[in-house]
Image 1 (cartoon, rainbow, N blue to C red):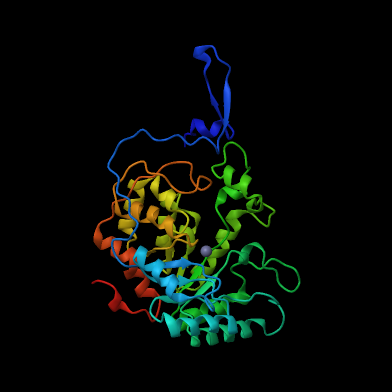
Image 2 (image 1 turned 60 degrees about the vertical axis):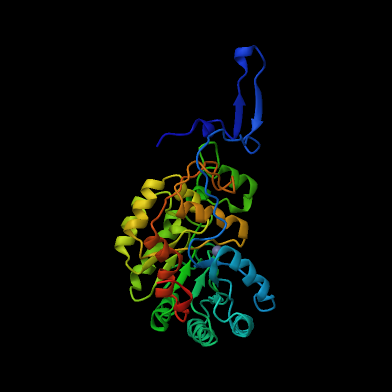
Length: 365
Ligand SMILES: [Zn+2]
């Protein structure tokens, strides 16, 4: 892989004025943001072409929130259903599902979360499974596992709990029996584990968010956590898993293809990795064509204005357009121009297939 000259300059850009005999001046990489002189057709998409389901969203206060305001914001984007992955469990979750039943029964969905504290103590697994069953009775439509599993969840002896820990097996099995999907975010982008120097594509993110820095002993190598996750998927073929953020392989779709082939129970969503697709629109489109039945729309952070970048990437053939966070991507993007039949699957058909209890009549054929 060839390295961009931009990267080789260690986050600092040298602007040479040597030809005019002037002294060299420097500029911060963060500051350098030239206005593109390229003139090409532009199709700004503030609204999706079809109604869509965002399977990766976080609303922390859904129990108290005014849902009319939220639905109005969703309507502007053509978001028909939002999946709130931060459902919690027990009474907190019930508050959310009660509010939804009363004010937005068809537009909002909640996934439950597991409380890992005390894992290892006797009866922990049975209790967690019973709580999940209760949460599903209260209206949860799936289970979300946060990245703390694999990174920071320890058992009652202080030992890191691996994603494929056998004490968790009954939970994954129960999700299969209940026919609810498990959306899981494991580890973080691989560059967080690499040396944060001028060769690291996420140098800016690690520098501006030092807490995201990882290493082979913090807590273990990236590959190890990812392997635990894949072993767990394979051990539970009757359970449907949604691997968040393309499983952190959006920058290596060849490898992701092999994983998709090995694990037919694994779906993927592209929250926060859309810029990876935008820098390889040809390869990405081939991937979407091949795995069109197992890709879901996800965004993660609820910043309504940022959805336009996602719609533009999926729907248009626009060239060299900007992404909205330089610390995710200092490059520009190219649209995949997906055909309508694939767009419909990504926007809603695939989610309708694997998340129970959604009203299909709200979507076109
Ligand atoms: Zn998330």
